[in-house]
Structures are given as structure tokens and as C-alpha cells.
Length: 383
Image 1: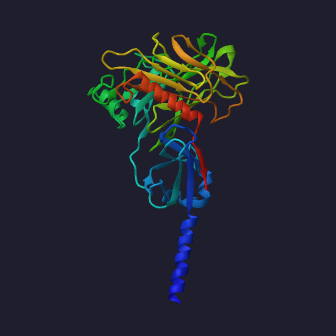
Image 2: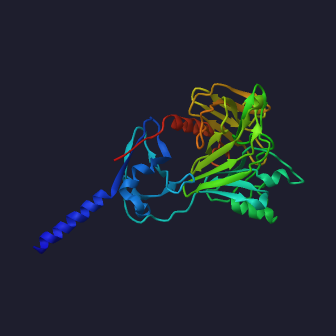
Image 3: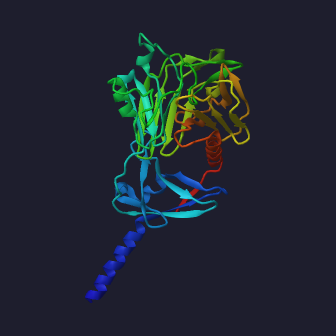
């Protein structure tokens, strides 16, 4: 009798474990290997199994090993996505198991921060690259008085998160981040340009830049695998007296050189032409693949610091790419139907010949592969 009771409880326990598990299947639909790619799963597909104890589970790969994960909230109170990274060979299908367990603490590979001590910069980075944009204090600074919506680029040769340290040392006059002290530096020139892949309304050969630096920011997610933040700008006039109310949603994943940028220009009544790109210096070291939706560009080499690379990727073909006001840009249609949280979406950013891309060919291969992944996303389903 005792054995029967024990068997009953064992079966009930095993049944409970079985109920509290989810399988995530991921299929690589391409003939290329996909390394450390981000897997996104709608949390609604999982929460009905784990409900309120969402923090008490682990994700196991095909070898039964724990892998790090993150909830992405996009500013909401409950998660929108569960994300983790995985590598798949060409045409490979893998199963990942979510089961009860205590996740390991992991070191964040991304960070975004507001830096009021440096004239209101918004600074963000991952284990590959770093960026910043200029805030309201800079435009009223008596020395610089700079208004720019361009994205500044800081190149790195270390996987460590170093922006906070660079700011601290620079402000204390210990070390300048304009000099490579063994981890990288800032030698990218932004000024009033689009920088490393920002955008602006365009008509004919005129770009309509923002009138002020961002007026507010919201950090929505901050690691360990993805950062997400939103910048809001004061309304300004684009061409044909169209008033735009611009919001930029920017995200950066661990291991990626390119930001995902979602531009929303508010409740406009007709479509806009939008240009996205970066400064062009007249050299011929670039590749434009309109059909595959990408631009790869190498700036002229700096004799001391090397070569900065820039790239732009879209999930649609590039219909028009040209040089306007010394900017190499692609032109996109912005539709008035875009609502809050949606908008014109593209990817842009940069790299460095001393930070993982020894040659322009290496960088272009990265951009080409990135574009292929965007056009042929992993197939993901839950059982």
C-alpha cells in the first residue's frame, strides 16, 4: 500500500514537471550559419504555463545547458518578449526547453545611460561598439551650442562596457576618450550631419534637420542582452510646412554593430520622404546593394587611428540611394498610417578595422549577412 501511494505521488510530481515546461523550436531557413542570433518569443505564448512565477525558470539548449535570457518590456509593466541568443547551422532546427529552475546571474553586455555631467548626452554600448546622441544642455552651451540629431560613434577593441569609465576619466582630465588608450576611442566626426545612420525628412536635395536636440528620453530596457530607449524631439517643420512630432525608438543587441531604429513622425496627414545615412567623403570604398537592401561604406583612413566603417540595412529594397549635402543616404517612404510604437524601421551603425573587421571586405560581409538575416528571419514556434 505504501509503495502504491509513493508511486502515485511520483507520477503526480512528474506530471507537474511536464505541465510546467515549454518547447521553443527554432528553424534556420537559410543556407548560411547563424551565429549568436537573437531569438524573440512572444511572452503571451509562454506566460499561461508559468504565470506569475516567470522568474523561476531556466532555458536549456540542445545539450541541456542553461543559456542566458532577458525579458523585454518596451516600457510596459509586463514583458512583451522573452529573448535569448543561439547559433544555428545552415537549415538547422533546434529545440530549446523552458523548465522550472533558478537562472544564473549573468554579466550585462549592453548599457544605456543619460549623462548629464557631459551636457546631457544619451550614451549606449554593447560588447562590440558604442554610440551617443546629443542632449539639450549641449545646444545652449556657450562654447559649442551644437544642435544635431546625428548619431556619434565610439569604436572599441574590448568586449567590456567602457563608456562610463571613458566619460569619468575624460571629465576628470585623466584620459581623453579622443585618444586610444588600449580600448578604443572617439575619432568620428558628427557635427550637423546624420552621423552613424540617423535620418531626416528630405525633398529634392534638401535635408530637414531637427530644430533642437532631444527634449526627453525614456530608458525602456537595459540588458543584459538588449537595450531599448526612446528619444522625443520638439515638433518642427519638414518640407511643405508639414509639422512632425519625432520619436526615435533605438535598440541594440549584444554582439551587434547595428542599431535597430524605429522612426515615428507623429500624426501627419500625408506620406513623407525620409533619408537615412551618413557623411560621405568622396572616396569610392563603398558597396550599394539595392536589391538586398544594404549600404557598406569605409571612411578615408586616419593615419593614426585607422578606418571607420558604416552600414545601413533595410528589410526592403533600396529604391533610391544618392549623395545629398555630402551625405550618402537611402530614401524611404514614411506612411501617415504609422501609430505610436511603430514607424519606419531600419538598421544602421558602424565598425572599426581595429575592432573586429580588419578589412573593408570583412565589414561588407558582415553587412551582407546582416541584411540576409533581416530578410530571412528565423522561424520560431512554441509547443
